[in-house]
Image (cartoon, rainbow, N blue to C red; front, top):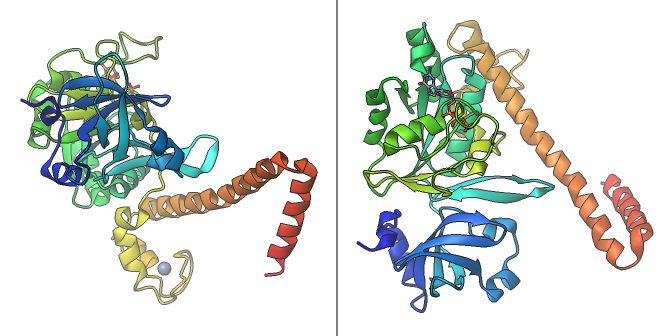
Length: 359
Ligand SMILES: Nc1nc2c(ncn2[C@@H]2O[C@H](COP(=O)(O)OP(=O)(O)OP(=O)(O)O)[C@@H](O)[C@H]2O)c(=O)[nH]1
Ligand SMILES: [Zn+2]
């Protein structure tokens, strides 16, 4: 079988690839400082982007990322293959780039299913789950909730009830590493050729799950690897193949995904639906008369905590916007320092601000 077929290529990508008859289709399996590892029809290769690509690329998010299908010229194993184009992404996990607040950085792409992992002991937290759901809905991947360490939980039915109130139609699976059968339940989602990823706080048991699915120690789990934060000691890979042909993307970036530019509208569909019935269109759902959201809370239909988290995430989203404006100012300073120096830049900003204040 063609190597690439093992790595989740679908007809959709094969079709798009025909637009580039001079190049070959490949998939990015890892990325490190501008160097990529790719799977091609001829096996694994190192790769870098072409000169033309790097000249024309105008946003961080347009660079290839783990999971991308790309069009390449395949070199022999000793020299880098050349990446010419990135095919349309089916799903995208992203976050605001460190140090560059107004640019998004792509963490991983073309993930079909994202398992949101939360452990049933101290890590259990509905607001965090909502946060992860927001990331998932925003990405285009299908979220499935995994509640790990069920062996440590005494009041599972109660918690399941709470989770279902925020999960809105997502599947929820209970697992325990002491019962491999519970983990194998994930195979109803992890079919051959499906690309999946696991997100959730550190220590909830993501590596443990992947190792059980892989039927080998793919990843170091916390007990063996308590001090050495380096992972993937066995494989060095960010994309793993499970025995049944499913693909797992496990990059450090996916593990660190925390605060999303989440799709609040989907995660909090119930609140947004209720809000349509508030008396005032700009209702803040705090103490306005005729507030449908408050009424739902009063009648016990909705949990007050859920509204609080909704408001909190909304505030964060707004704050993101503000801070990016500040970053914009810094960028202008930098730009002007090239010709004319910092003084000119400051003057420019001052005038600019004055000008803005007039509006
Ligand atoms: N009791 C119990 N412990 C578990 C279970 N799953 C994992 N653990 C333990 O939880 C700890 C953390 O597990 P990991 O699999 O390393 O967690 P992780 O989510 O991969 O953590 P990071 O790599 O930091 O993101 C280890 O000591 C595991 O043995 C479970 O189902 N039940
Ligand atoms: Zn309201």
